[in-house]
Length: 508
Image 1 (cartoon, one colour):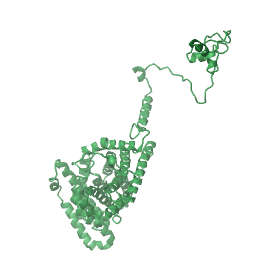
Image 2 (image 1 turned 30 degrees about the vertical axis):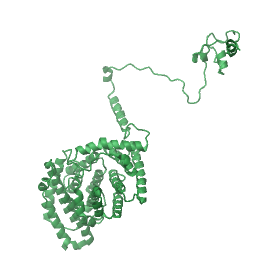
Image 3 (image 1 turned 45 degrees about the vertical axis):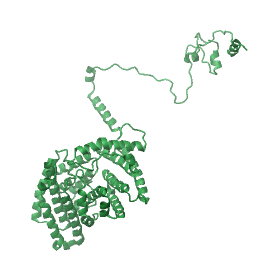
Image 4 (image 1 turned 180 degrees about the vertical axis):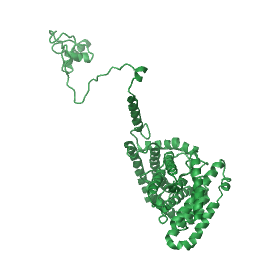
């Protein structure tokens, strides 16, 4: 067969020209849509017939076509309106600006906590939380430290960390961010983002439980670190802050498996920082707990040398409290506990004498001599030492009187008045310093207790500082302390244990 013959066989059979039927168009509507050359055959063109398409014909009006439900073929476009000049803008209703401002504010609230990620895996959250700590939190903490601290370091080697720590860091990052940007408890955006924090926390809990159940990892350094990270993370959030005792008890149980506190610190010196964090939270929590409902006050006093040694690891962030005064706080907690346990026998017993000797020792403490041992800036170190000395004096007198360990004498009332005035004055002065304003969390609580008997202006200042501190540090605890003081102000109680009538951790 020749090529010509093959070409002829491949062509469609020609049909004789047909008369025009149904309109004078040269092309059918389908060929026009497909941009083909129509053969204008009537009543239907040959190309439509060969392709199995129903030819729409040659009418002057385009025939209707059926579409699947919800399918849109074309859209009507609006012509852009002319741009308004300045004179038009000035003639606008002033309410228009308010509406636009409200829209912008609502759009800002819809920005996700980690912008730019809508569909994410857990790995994305972990990486982004690491960036948040390193780019947002770490620089702020470094620039606002009174002294260089070994505790303030960037998050690194996260891929080597246990899953429990990885997911806990994400939950902590979210809680920190939420404390800084929103106080609206019923905000749907806050609820949505916080649910992600709970999801990561749940994953971390499962991973930590798995590590504790496994005998190979139960007593490891990583597991101990995970518990402390959990403790810190739960203290940051309003919903989880009440879990602090469970974490402290769990950490103490793991330490006992490692031979006890002293063996742990002697055999593994790097873990001293974990022990110090635990004891700081525990002993400050004892100060804001009832005298008869503390965590191991006698044992903590027996470990005072170990705690003092752990203090030498370096400056603890935002806690410029001299180690001597911190040990005195532990001593006061022990005397409160013993006084309540022994009841009315205290007034003439050895506890009263021991308590008075301790208070004399605290009032004789020299902030000037202590600050001389510190590097620059010595003036700021001196101010903070005076703040903590006055706070410890006031706490010691008020809490020991509440427990019945010392009497309500005129002498102690005079001492309280002196240190109360000095503490309030120093707190107002330190509030103007970006470095010192974050170092007074516990002294503000003590001042808040003493403020019940003074002017409403002073109480408003203290409560306002607690709100600011929660926002600046990204933690919930200052707001928890504010709620405790507000209830105390509204009550008829006057004693320390009337204010702190339940175990609470308010310092981290």
